[in-house]
Every structure is written in C-alpha cells, then in structure tokens.
Length: 343
Image (cartoon, rainbow, N blue to C red; front, side, top):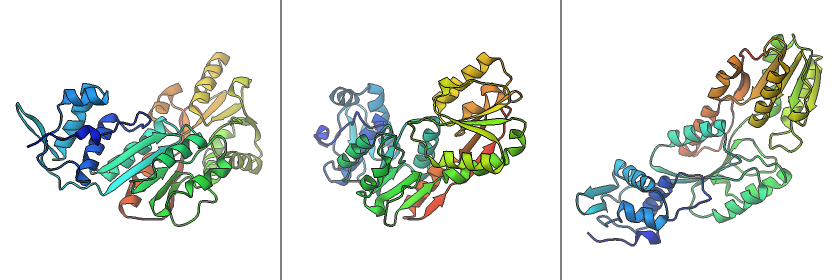
C-alpha cells in the first residue's frame, strides 16, 4: 500500500450548496474512475483532510464513513484508510441549479436524491433568481456532467433565459417546475401549469370563498413567480364575479372583514399573518388566508392554513426516474387544494 497525492484531486467548492462531505466523496470517486487513485492506495487521515481542505473534522469523518458504507474505503487499525475497491462506477453525475432555497425546494431535492440512489453524484447550486449568476455557474460547470437539472425562475431577464438554457445539450437537460418558451430540442421536463392550476384550485374552494366579498392576490412587482398565476387568478374572479385586487406590497394592505388573501411568498405570508393578528379579526370567519406551496408548518399555523400546491415529492421522484430511464418526456405535475381552517 502506498500513499496517494489525494489533494491534487479533491476540490471543495464554497459556492456549491452540495454538503461538503458529499463533495469530498464525489471527488474521490471521480478520481478513482479517472484512474488517479488506485486500489490499495492509502488515503490521508481524517485530521489531514480536515486541515488541508479547511473543513470540520466531523465533515471529513462523515465523508469517509459514506465511502466505507458503499464499499469503496477500508481501514486498518493503526495504519489508516485505504481504497478497498475500484470497481465502483458513477454512471451519473448531475448538476442541479435551483433558483432559491426553501422548504418546498428541499422536498424536491430530497425526493430526487432518494429516488436516484447512492451511486450517483449530485452537485447542487443556488443562483438566487439571478440570470447573470445562473449563466456564470453554468459556464463554469459545462464539463463532466451527465445531466443538468434546472428550476428556471428569474426576477429579471427571464425573456432571455431560453438562450442560456439552450447552451445545455438537450439530452442532458431536465427542466423542473416550469417550462421556458424558446427552449428547443428534445429534453425532459417536470412542470406545473401555473394559470390552469390556480384557476382550478380556486374553483374547488369556490363554496368557501363565497362567504367573502373580495379576493386579494399578493403579487409583488419584482418576483420570480410566473405571470400566469395572475392570469389564472383574474380569469377565475371574472368567471365567478368575485371582487378582486392584485396587491404588489403586502405592507400596504389595509385589512377588512370579508376579504380573502392569497400569498405566494413565505415572507409575505409572515407579514400578512402579523397584520391579521394586529387587526383582531378572526381567520377563517372574518378574513381568509390561502398560501402557495404546501409545507409541514402550514398544517399548524393559525390552526391550519389552506394551501394550493403541487406535489413536490412527486416532482423530485419523477425527475429522477426520467434520468434513470433516459426519458425526454414532458410531465405535468398535478396541483391540489388542501382545505384548512384559515378559509
């Protein structure tokens, strides 16, 4: 057994949202595939890895434990860790680009990774709805990936997003949550139909909504949420003769009895609830609250907040299965209303 110059092959990306222990293990597995690390090569100690890569000892230990779990790494008391097997093969190496971190995005990610299984490398990046950052990350990550999984939501420049996305080879592209006009070729997509979804969800809630005289959609001027949501909302209100209003700033609300509020963003929901509590109106009787995107916490807040939401677990699972099956299908994820006391 001989020591290997492992630090020539391991790289920890501070900009990546992928846990550092997985970056460590993925780097080692990639080096094994490339023949740079061979069977029976000795690896540095956990303390050495921690020092050289500037990561915690717990992170280094977690990475080594993962490699032992999948049978790649062995250990000899008093000597250290060595490469036990090199017949491991990562057939898939995936770059995930999400617009933001949130509770429901985590559900998508967890379901996706779980459905793929352990023998897949996933590098995870967040571009904060910024098209320029998205383009920069993508330009730096165009080599070595079998697939690119993208949630394409942008606050500015969305009309040009298709040009950037079209630089990704279509056989490697999976669009999540939203399809982008102008993206050509045969690619995979798991998406929501935003205009249709909110229209039908509000239709299901029509009986409960009828006890209120006005529906207000909180839709900020600068938001990554698709404009199709507003179109579906307006179409429903016009179809069923509801008084309605689109509000750009939640802090400018003047809350009155008989109004229902639909909140898209989590921060706006918090501000809305604070104002409702201050107004001393009873939620579910005098005012109504509907929130976009189901999360576990919404089952509890105000004795339960009514949500309209896609199935994020299903979205992640289907995307993973499409990669495993090499599918280029376009799958529309069902949207549903979950009625609770807030309405």
